[in-house]
Amino acid sequence: MSGHSKWATIKHKKGATDAKRGKIFTRLIKEITIAAKTGGGDPDGNPRLRGAIAAAKAENMPADNIKRAIQRGTGELEGVSYEEITYEGYGPGGVALIVDVLTDNKNRAVSEIRHAFSKNGGNLGESNSVSWMFTKKGVITVPKSAAGEDKLTEIVLDAGAEDLSDEGENWEVLTDPKDFEAVTEALKAAKIAPEHAEITKIASTYTKLEGTQANAMIRLLETIEDLDDTQNVYSNFDFDEAAMANAGH
Image 1: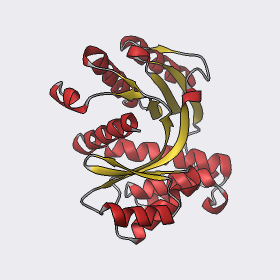
Image 2: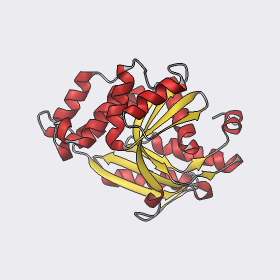
Image 3: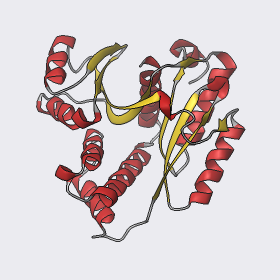
Image 4: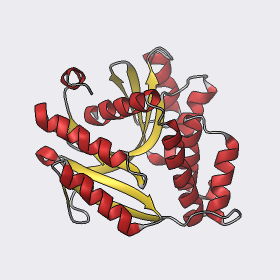
């Protein structure tokens, strides 16, 4: 858990400080569109779409943006046709990586992903080479200033959450994907605003890196995440936060 939460927190803080909110919205819109395209535009009958909408609302996306993304997916509005592709591979020190891509150009996507891996000490692997290490979960980060442990525990467990853990400045709530929406809605009803909420993949074990290997791994993650076609990146990378801060990350 710790490896996931630390990197997710750093990503979110970085996104808030370097004007990447537009990119967050772009990725959420693409996910809503593809979810509506593959499972229909009714959230009640489309669990993936419900999860995508919940994640978008957690990031304060306007309702009109969500509606238009659904309409592009169902064909009511004209839009780009995206293809879903998942790449798996290894980073420095043998860290496992999964990269979800939504692209309108498969050749461009694989070329950019392969280049990012090779340039930063990693390599692409075969399908299913690392995915067995990961489980899909809902993860909700709540600042400790927003709620005490006892109150938060009662709210999220009653709504179906699996676990609540102490992650330094934040509480981290873990849910089954099917309960993600119910838990985020319960927090909203209690006037508790999550710092971040997403359905992600969590590794069963983590690989801790230090020094140059850790820095190389962070460069690889940042390079992949900056690609336009990248939708999600999952890894079992763990590191020492203080050391990374001293190194400028």
